[in-house]
Length: 431
Image 1 (cartoon, rainbow, N blue to C red):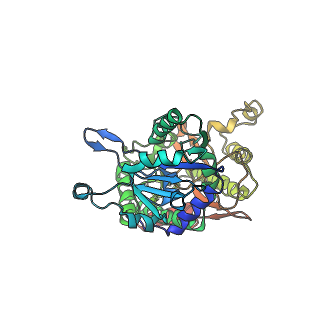
Image 2 (image 1 turned 90 degrees about the vertical axis):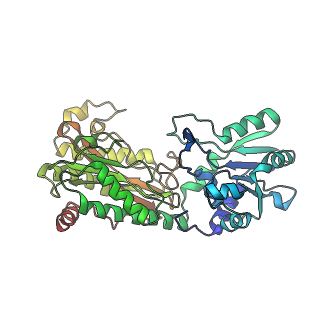
Image 3 (image 1 turned 135 degrees about the horizontal axis):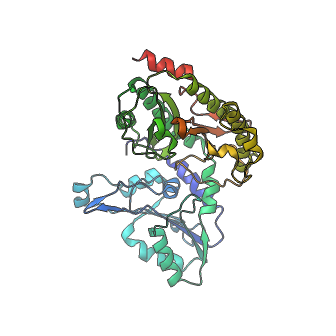
C-alpha cells in the first residue's frame, strides 16, 4: 500500500461500536471483495470491501472477519482470517500480511488462515443463536452480482435453517455516516492531493489540449502524492460534453471559447475526495459563462448555509431547488408561466438542474447513510449544484466537500480556487 495506515485503535473502536448493537448470542461475518476475472488470466485491480476495511484495516483479498461478542471462549470474540502466504505467492505477488502484521494493523489477537474458515464457522455456529450477513444495500446499487457474502448466506440458510438471520447494513450505515476525527484527516489528505491536481491542470489547460491529456495530468499528481488513483472515473467534459452528467469518454479536443467541467477526486487510503470545477479552456470566461457560473456558485454558497444537524436531505433539496429556480429565472432560462404550470413531482428547474445537491462521502464516493434521517455532526457531504444547457453547450457544476458540525459546516475544500477571479488569475499567470 502507498498510504500511511491508521492506528489499529480506530478499527478496534469501530468493531466495539458494531458489536454493541448486535443481538445477544449472534455472530457476524464479513468478507473481502472477490477477485474478479477481467479476461483470460487477467484480473481487475482488487478493491477492498468498505465494511471489511472499516472493521479491520486490512487492505488485502482473501480476508474474513468473524465477530462473536458472546462467544464462550474469549479468543473467539474477534477472529481475523487472512491468506496464508507461501514462496510461490511471494514470488509472483510479493508481500502479504503475516499474522503478526495483521494483528498490528487490526488490533485483533486471534489471527488464523482462511483455509480453516469452514471448520471454524461450523464450530462457532453451533454456539450461537443467529448470524449477521453483510450485503450491499446501498439505495443506488442497481445491479445484482452474487458475492462471497451471498454464497455464504445461501450455505448457512440451507445448513442452519433454525438460526435467525440479521442484517449488518443498517448498523454500519449509522456508524459509517458519522466520521471520526481520523477519518476526517484521511479525507482531508485525499482532498489536499486533489487540490494539487487541480492547480496543476489550471496551468496546463489551453485550446488544443485533449480531455485525456488533462486526465493524464491529474493521475500523475495523484500517484506522485501516494494516492491509490482516482476515487471514481474522472469526468473531463469540454463544451457540450459537460451536459452529459456521467461523461467519462474524455476523448475530445478542448476548443477555444468552451468551458470544461472537471469532476474528479483522489482515493487516499480508501477515502475519497469529490471535486467539481468548471473552467474556461482559454483562461477567460465570457460574459454569459460568468453569469451562469456566478449563479451556480451563489446557489452552492446558499446551500452550504442550510447544512446543520437536524436537517433532512429531502427538505434541504427542496429549498435548494427554490434557490435554483430563482437563479434560472434571472438567467431567463425559466419563465413564471413554466413555474406556475410545473409538475410538482418534477419541478421546472429540473430541466437544467436534474441531479441532487448533496450525497454522503467517505469510504465510497456515494457513501452509505440514511437520507431520510436527520443530519448529525460528523457527517460528510458533497455540495454540488449545477446548471446544464445543451442548446448553449454549457454545463457548469461546482462541488465542495463539507463536514457537518454542531453549528454548521467545515468546508474541507476551502483552499481550492473557486471564484471566477481566482481561476482566471491562476490560468493566465501560468501561461
